[in-house]
Each structure stands twice: as structure tokens, then as C-alpha cells.
Image 1: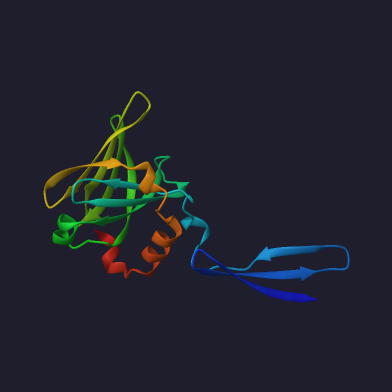
Image 2: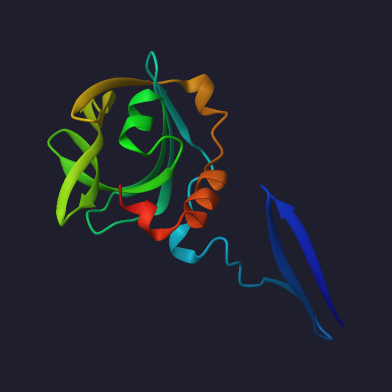
Length: 167
């Protein structure tokens, strides 16, 4: 006997197929096009704030070639609007840089840094965001970080046209 069960999790429909045999019952996840094996994000996100900017961050669970976790960033605020990326979810590559990490993107074949973190005494000590040739200091907000929904960021990223994913 086979049964199909649809579950609504974080706004996504997941399909499971129940395969029954005479000795045991096994539930196997069916292919989920919204989330593939290489695009799984941590269930815990981060929010960074400044006076007029907000950044939501989701980290991919799979490590990149440098052994770091790439991120999805959603930047909101006037400078992001001027840059043409306001409220867009964009993937950035994490690369080692001195005592921290740069979150980079490619444009016209060159690498550019959108955001960076630097460590002091083993923890992230400060973050900077780069928009329109300006530097913005942003600060991690633990309380607002609880509001970030990484799977929503991933879904928004996957629904963004490929041409918009390059900033």
C-alpha cells in the first residue's frame, strides 16, 4: 500500500511517499525542487542593523572550496535602493581575509566585497557593508536575528531571475 503525504513546512510543500512492504514501513522524502542537496541553509539566521540599514543573513550548510559557508544577504535601506539591490536576496561567496571573512560577488569578471567581518579574540567583532563606494558599520542584533527566516530567504533567492543574482 502506498500513501502520499503533503506537508506544509515554512511555506513550502514537501512531498513524502510511504513505501510499505510486508516486513517494515519506510518513509522516503521525494525530490523537493525548492531545496536541493547543495542549497540547504542553517535554520538560524542573523540580522545586522545600522541607523538606516538592515541586513538579513542565511548561511549555507555546505562548505565552499575555502572551507567557509557562503551566505544569502537581503539588504534593506536607502543605500541598497540606490545600488539597485534593496530587498533582493543575493548569494555571496565567503572568502578568508586576514582575521575574518569577506562576502564577495563577481561583476564584469572582477571580485568585489559586499560585506566583511573581522574577528578579535575568537568572535566576530565588527561588520562592514559596502554600497555605492560607501562603508556602513552594521551591528549584529541577537533579538532581531530570531525573526530571520532562512528558508524564506532561500526560496526568494531561488525565485530571483539569474540576471539579478549577480550583484
